Image 1: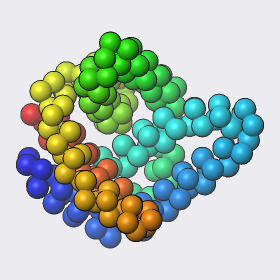
Image 2: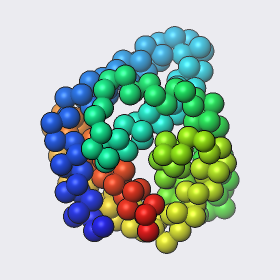
Image 3: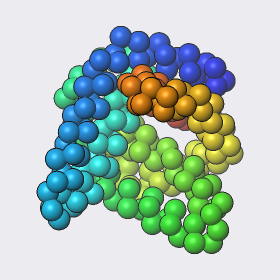
Image 4: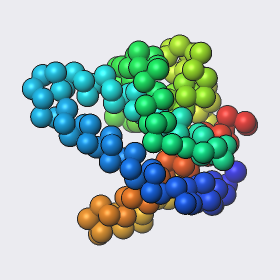
Length: 190
């Protein structure tokens, strides 16, 4: 699929669902906000639940790409795999950090190489975190630049978000997330 097709599909997929996606965002924000004010335990809780929320969001956007209905309860579907999501997040962070120690550019390239790992785990929950990471690396081989250019194509949307003091993010975040899920599906099938 071309960038235009990925974006067009994303617009269709989120059409009529911005409200529920915004409510999900508010729930995550509220939980993280509360955690920020709990000394020590809040930081640990944030460290544990953030990857589970990331996995849940990947599951939600993959459901949207399949034209399935979503519900607010889907926001917690990734918590069934909290351990895997946490371990995957730790592996990604450690490997990117180690690659960045060599030079900044290898770290950035590896960040793109590992970028589909959460989508892979959401799509294949039976995989281990290490297997999802390995599959992401293989899947993204030769597609790192494609994803970079795709993300860069949202520059004006990010700028609009800044100009509107974040209000545009209500639409921009789901639009970018759905486009990324479509990108995952397009390279998965390639």
